[in-house]
Length: 309
Image (cartoon, rainbow, N blue to C red; front, side, top):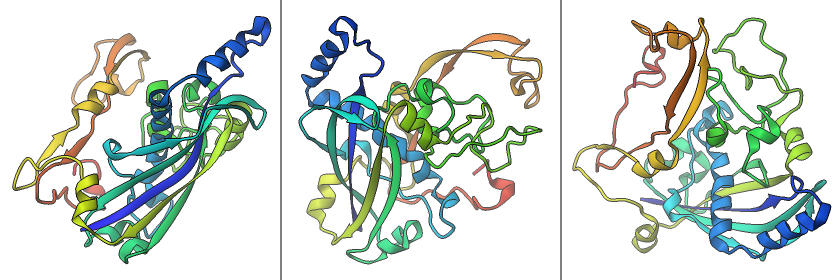
């Protein structure tokens, strides 16, 4: 096996700009958040941390010689916080805490070099850098599509509840497409922000530079046992859905579909009978291989099988 320490430092907080300074309202809100316990800050730190997932999952688009490199399962994340304090982040008024993240990724020694060649040896290290919102909530409402990477996704897929899954701090301002082409490599398809993600963060939210470091350490069963998550459910491969993710990210949304919408025409028949408003049950599903053997999805580099496994 192989053990990969993962760590970073960050800052999270509650943006006070939205609260009026009249009648002492902002001071009351600030005092309220200064009294919050670690449970409150853990939820906010977790929310900020998952904003790194898009670039981890689509790492091959940023590095030609690297594959996906993820954080350990959320169940073994460990956050340590400073005392909450009032501060300015850029031009923004905040109640903030400083965060230290630590966990260990338990993996196998044979394939770690496919994800990151630097981790092929003991004491090997690799770091990646993100610019993240200090306040991760209401990001879509505050910055629009500036930090949204819609590449390879249908238009209007993004909602405020799932914005973390499309967050890409490298997005720049882009001109509108003359003709919609989902295969073009770009961030924006639904809307065309006039400024970059980083500028939108600094203007509307406040940002923090975060460096995640992966560090390979010698393998010991004691450490592996502490950070190993889940149990094998089969002697062979076994694809199992993650129930918690399904429950946490299920919501009802309203969406208008026009005459030219893909749901009116895709497949062998219509998904809906007529244009108009529809109430949708939307959810995010995740699955893990909880079996003892690898699961083989086919040649994922073959265009004929790109979306079929």
